[in-house]
Amino acid sequence: MSDANIFITEESIEGDEDGPLADTTVAVKDNISTEGVRTTCGSEMLADYVPPYDATVVSSLKEAGATVVGKTNMDEFGMGTTTETSAFGPTDNPAAPGHVPGGSSGGSAAAVAAGEADVALGSDTGGSIRCPAAFCGVVGIKPTYGLVSRYGLVAYGNSLEQIGPFANTVEDAAELLDVIAGSDERDATTRDAGDETDYADAATGDVDGLSIGVPTELLEGADEGVVETFWDAIADLEDRGAEYHEVSLPSVEHAVEAYYVIAMSEASSNLARFDGVRYGHSGGYDGNWNEAFSKAREEGFGDEVKRRILLGTYALSAGYHDKYYKKAQDARAWVKQDFDEALSEADVLASPTMPVPPFELGESLDDPLQMYLADANTVPVNLADLPAISVPAGETDGLPVGLQLIGPAFGERELIRAASALP
Image 1: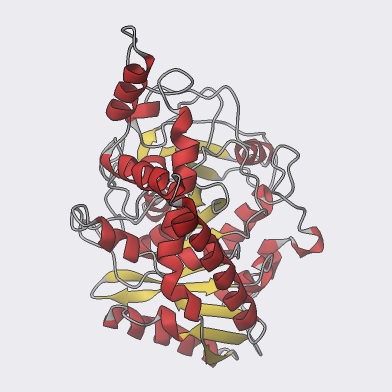
Image 2: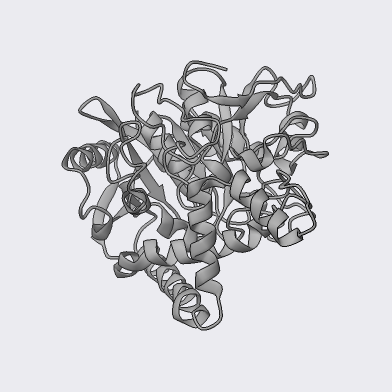
């Protein structure tokens, strides 16, 4: 294991001899199933779990000739923004030592930033690819919901999450997306993108005439240095022929609250299977199954996972379902409508990926609300089922800053074209 604690398991999985990713090394987030190689989700609950099958994306990697070099550290069950809730300890940020790499896919972003892998796979439920991409100074793509199969991804929030790539360049990330995108009969939410594939070919850097909408709400309250770096990147795009105008997304004021109600509710349901009998750490049986289940979950789950299960269970409980969960779904529909309207006036939308630079290690652990609010610019995209990309925009006080570009559903080619124009 490296000094930065990037990998939970370092084990080589060889792909086919030929293919578009031959001679390419890939790090895989530890919530994506790998046959015969343990998949822990960063949790004591699954510390010894070894899947009997590959996720569809892993099968695709093998067929493309890639070599998987290990399973990367992550916030437990994907719940976190810093990769500090992992049962296997925090990951340091190779691009900013002493700071968090972002989360929950922090290990995957760190693997690319540190040169431990050429490219990597993560999953994004509310920013878990884009946040670490921004904090580690690499490229990360959150695909449109349904573009990439979730078969073999250990579920956190089914209606929100997508698997996506990390790389040092937009073109390399697009090449990895080419390999993993497409319909899958084992995941009924996927669809074939048809003629809109060949993503790597879209990385032309030609943004002449590109219309960029800047949602004013996603700049409010952001760190001053982050905002300055963001505008410098927009100026670079303007110099290359793009133009920008301001747009409004009034619904995003409520996006974080809606997101966490929905995500925690889905987590409460999804994690019910981890009871020490069907899956996970055993609590031992001494004549009382309820106590055995309770002990397994008490010992197997960390504090952040317990917090989200409890809040999600409460939001779904009798008498509160309409008050919280139904209202959150109404807010989600409002967010989708706002994005559709904004994108009818622009080719892509742009914002800082994260409103703040990377936290120092340990800084946000005692303040969950600070961690949740840091997702303000990323969670609306998941609520709207849209694609987004984070690309390095520069630095503030020596810390990486990411630029987020958001496109219409299955508009990955336009995002890749726009992002590839940045140096």
